[in-house]
Length: 187
Image 1: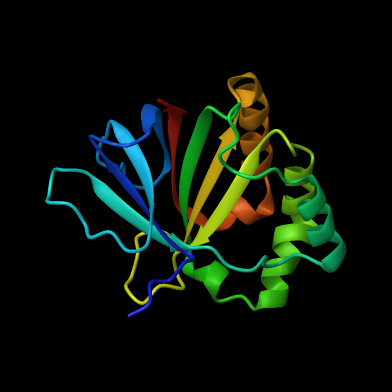
Image 2: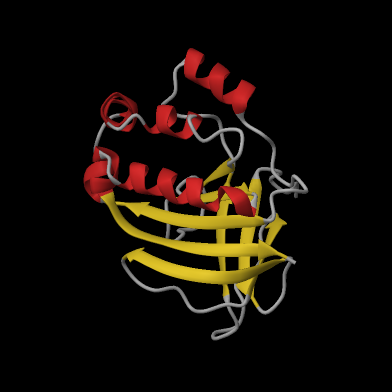
């Protein structure tokens, strides 16, 4: 059986290269506390109760973007794992049934024409790198629809806060029913 190279498991527990520095519930239920985080390729089984958690998602093609927007993202985006990107934030999000009841075109209208999600993100590149993981594309149900992983240098933490504030003020965020932030530091 071939492993899916686009599948990643985010493992919260007592071990891992990323140390949890803060955890914030924005909406919904609070995650179990963990000290560290690992991002591992493939499917990692859930730990024993009380020993942490696993969230899974797959990378995919860019959605809701036009060709010119995608080209600007490709030119501006930096890769993950840069030596100076010693801070990271994992943001799991679940959107409500109303969002998923919309057509692709209707979601694009909210995502970009009304919320300007891509345009806002472009303003913070290349300092803030990101990778989006889709959870709804997996065979087994996951508690979130998206896992967004951000990396940046400590000097850019204030800019990251501004990015979050701007995105959360958009029409798109009225469809979010669960969200939390896990702030991390490498080492």
